[in-house]
Image 1 (cartoon, helix red, strand yellow):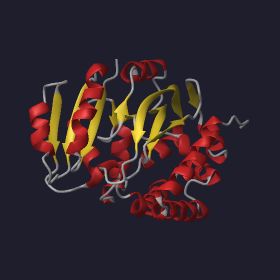
Image 2: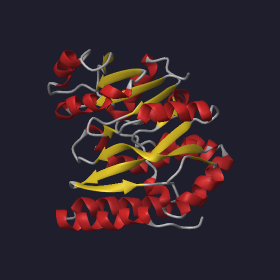
Image 3: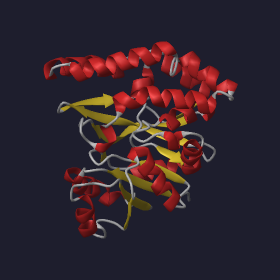
Image 4: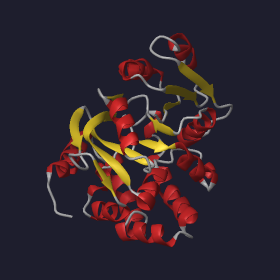
Length: 289
């Protein structure tokens, strides 16, 4: 059976660590790697006390700050697991996550990426993030249709299980130039090149704290991520054509995403709540693709 390494990059997120470890206690993870990215709080001290309390935990530390993606690669170089799953300290795993991911890998041995539906908590309110309400393999062509129909925002980065060699290849091809959050662009590239499996159950809970390690750098990194993705895959015409057709890194998509993100950041809390109500209302609509 393929091994899945659970990876937790951390920078000054000690306030979330105990809760995260408790959530994974009953999941029977194959391997858990904690990577500290030069924290200045008491994260390492706390983890050293908890290291064997809930499950065997490998603790690593970057000698210099490398950002979320850099911390992920530190863990990838440490493990021999075929698949990895990357988390933020403020996110939660729901019952059945590990068992269902293992079963999906056994059922679809040629697939590189496994995603799932999620609960989303923003501003203290809970929403459902649903791509498809059933387990399914999505081909690259069908993935394009999903993006064009507006389902891109329902694809869940947190809690994905992805083949480790894919992430390392992306890093070697240009991702190492990134010094902050890469925002899972390697996941989107995998979707367009080989497709992916979506699990219909909501197996993760994603929280959006604006000052947590996993949430930092979104505004500054989106344009850079898109530019590097175009550079890496510009020679793969079929993949690039699919991505352009879906509007993932076209000029219009870049501009609109940056305007939207900036606008959200400037909104007062009551406006953001109304915006999220509208945004996630899409999850309940049924559309023909």
